[in-house]
Amino acid sequence: MATIQKKPSRGRDYWAIVESRRVNGKPRPVVLEHLGTAENLLKRLQQGAIQHKVKSYSHGLVAYLLHVVESLGLVQIINRHLPNRQMRDGFTVGGSLLLAAIGRICQPTSKRNWYEGWARRTSLSYLLRMSLAKIDSQHFWDQMNALPTETIPEIEEEIVDTLYDQGLLSMDTLLYDTSNFFTYIASTNQRCTLAQRGKNKQRRIDLRQFGLLLLVSRQDHLPIYHRTYQGNLNDKTIFKEHFTSFSDRLKRLSGSLEDITVVLDQGNNSKEILKDVDQTIYFVGALSPYQHKHLIERANLNLNDVPVGDKNVSCYQERTTIWGLDLTAVVYISEKLKDGQIRGLEQDLSKLCSELDQLRETIKNPSKKGKKRTDDGLRKKIASLITSHVPNDLIGWELSLLHDDAFDLQYWINADHLEELKEWQFGRRILITNRHHWSIEEIITAYWGQANIEYVFKNMKNPFHLAWRPQYHWTDQKIEVHGFICLMAFLLVMVVFKQARERAKFSGSPHTLMEKLSEIRLATLIDAPNQKSKGRYKATYQLEEMEPDVKELADAMGISELPLKTKIPFSVYNF
Image (tube, rainbow, N blue to C red; front, side, top):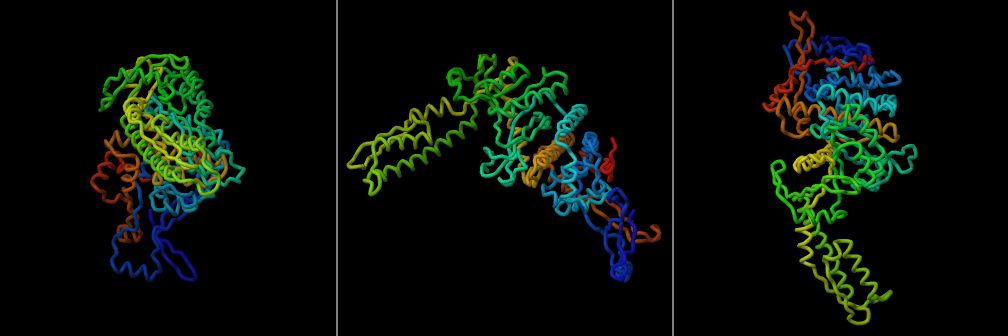
């Protein structure tokens, strides 16, 4: 209950409406509104102020996230695996990490700006009945430092067990992929080994990066296994290093690998890797058409239209031996890939023709200074220029001597070869699997699920929700814990998204869902003293009016019925 208290300052008495909340685990008065001096307070009372809205807070998203955290017992799971039960500003380590994850969902910001930039404008403090004003970057750094990186896999495994036990996790088809995230860690920083220079997928090759391995369920994109790794390691090296670890986890979780299929990205396929995978688990993968041209040639002569989802796809299937393995291969034409390859080739041809025209104009006149041109040197230069843009056989050309070191260059496009590329090579994909009883539709549908994990990584680079950046950490331990926080954030969003689809028939994206839930606001109303309240101020909280679509979503997900106080043990190590 809110009360009115006197606060002396510089020889004068000021009054404020306060409410008791816990700070550092102890009850402390938290100011809801400053009323000023006794004279100002009397003036307001004489004006007959009965009730007014003091402030409103973003509520729906943080309230539902806390509801999910409570139902999964995430704070208790983290705290159970800690070697030291450290407290900071009244919060356990697990509590602080979950607060960081919720902030990462709602508004990714630096940990220094966590409270001022986001938390104070939400109902989080009221729901916890704890003051958050002292939570700053030092708070998070101290709490992150209390989590040993070797305990992260154990925590993750227990979380996945909880998801499985509660029926939230479907294990039939799993998606595996890797990505990387650039950092601004200085090259002179020797304390960090994770951040290394490598081929960055956002084309920031000038910066150090770290990598992320991720295994998620196809149905709801719930993370099952993750690792943060050095940014200069390639996909095949990482897969070989972690395959045994994540396959053992899957076996412990489900008891058997018979009903599980892992979908692999093309970058993880090699003769050695597939041999180990084929002996352990069922999989669907992809091969490069340029390394299996005979299979493409057979497929081109035997393509048939097969319904896959809501479209017809030209496909070919055969059981064959590849790299000594008995596999089912499916070749199909991706119209999207084909159109992209054609556009790319046309752009390359346009650029090449422009450069060849420029070269022709240059060499038709004798060189004015320097080393004289030679026929052999020009031929090597032209051949190199062509092969750097398009397949060699696509361009025909002739070079003839005019006089001195002046030459004439004539070139043309091989129309027949261009047409052959478009009709017989472009758009082809090769899929392989050891699920021999699966139909073409099942194999293609499973592989198309790989686009979902690409969407997962895209969400993680979304600057508005779930972003891994900014990450102002410069040591391996902090980067790994930061990655774990971001994975918990992603897990929470995917659970909320799953429940929104099931309960509210929500059809938008996770980003849209986060925005909709953030629009649900909690208002603080203060009743002025009256006879019934025995001269006391009374603060009440209620949801603001909502737009019809937001109210329908809130009602379907039960947000209106959620209690305005969480039972999560943020401030006590309660297992």
